[in-house]
Length: 295
Image (cartoon, rainbow, N blue to C red; front, side, top):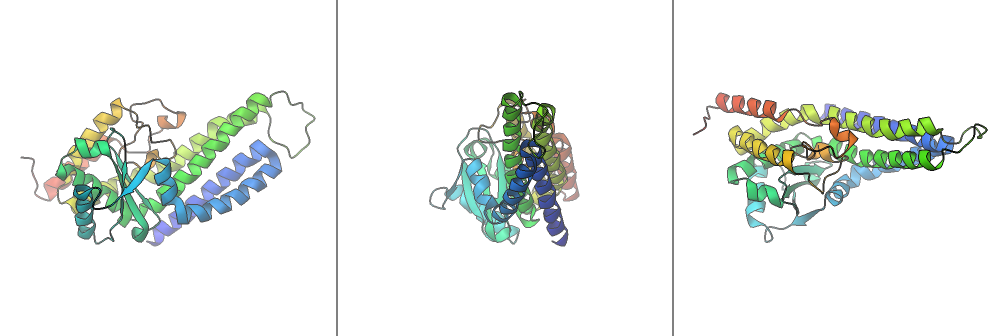
């Protein structure tokens, strides 16, 4: 609990510093000051409203027990197994199977699954995926992931601004007043390095936590092999199809990187998830330790 609070604080400070640095390059001293103010506001809003922001970015909509009784009942059962409050249940309308969790704490959490994952996975496999996401909720990983997604989106937006500023501001002369934005080379470097830095931060946040969530998911659903089978299926789809609702800012939040088989973005070259085959191997080892064998 304390460690996660420290990590969250460090993350917010690091992303805030990165945002201010990019603002300084794009807009000079005034840009840095503006981004400092924006970053303070983002820290506040990302803490209280990051779940709503991420759900909206992903095109997820909340459903009730009447809307999706099968899914809602499974989430309710697994939340009870994990000793967690019932989270909000959301669905993303896409054929590509995937899932994520978001929220600032277990009392304000939401789990989101795609329509595709409900069609591709059987009951036990879907339970494994939801157990994984609920473990993220229990471990309080979801606040850090949600904050990272919010800041990564802002950094990507500034990087795009730097790119256009480099294109249209290339004719500036060397007599610019000190304190204005950076030159062509600085702006182009920012357009490349800023989203890369955001991706590296996302990697550091996400990769180690996926193994812990897999282990917890196997325990919550009662069968690590079900989660292993689910990961194998989701990975096969991710290799073939890009999930249109996902973005580089939110890719670290999904159970499988939605850009696994795509060159969609420069940031997607840096995986936010550990190798799926290694995750599957660990789950099979966990199943053996629990005395569960594949029939």
